[in-house]
Length: 298
Ligand code: TA6
Image (cartoon, rainbow, N blue to C red; front, side):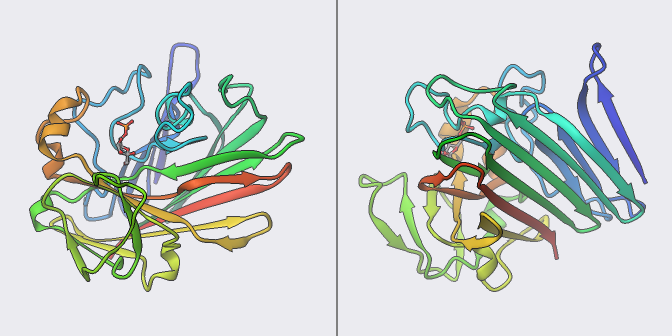
């Protein structure tokens, strides 16, 4: 097993690469604390990364698991889409590796990144824990200031499904969702399909899914294999709270319209994104909100 830290000319860590004894690998850019790779012992790439993604810090990385905070989309017009967590360099707090497990923690706070439209003291932490066939990412928001603030957070996970036409998603039947492609994006629809397929542009927020309450989470069956996505959230000292799940595939036209998204990338990826995004959440002074994702290769 090994941990490689790629540093810039100032000696700051830019990339962390870890390999377990089994051969499982993960890669994390300190820019945005963006996980860009997770491969299993038999070489299955679970994470999709656009070949045209900017990896030089000039914009958020297209692919991997970008982190959204303090808003999802652009409800605060003065702030960039999806906030500032994904386009700033985080600090590596610590790393440990054993034969069969790797863990690292990265952090960001208001002394490193903030915005006048959202001027609150905060701390973000991303705890990445890799085992042979599992990648757990805990995304923790802490209000370190004297007053409550409102926020949204999300793990914008790009899965490598290899072929979207041979991909189905199970575990969402009966869940209510907002359809951002519809004329009325405020309507709550019901997912009626046991095994949802993706055959066009899809952008929807399944609300209150609290994925770890779904038996076995959401299961993505695709040529890469069976990928389980479990999302859950706790508040304060571990009070379970409902979390949401975003499903997104831009499809052909929108993929072509993004300079950092491979034109045919929509055929190989699907975003399944655990988040706290249906609306803003209030976080009192001193409180934490922990949004956890567990990616498992079954
Ligand atoms: O994944 C949901 C979403 O909000 C989509 O509406 C789309 O905008 C996507 O995020 C990508 O956003 P980005 O700013 O990374 O291009």
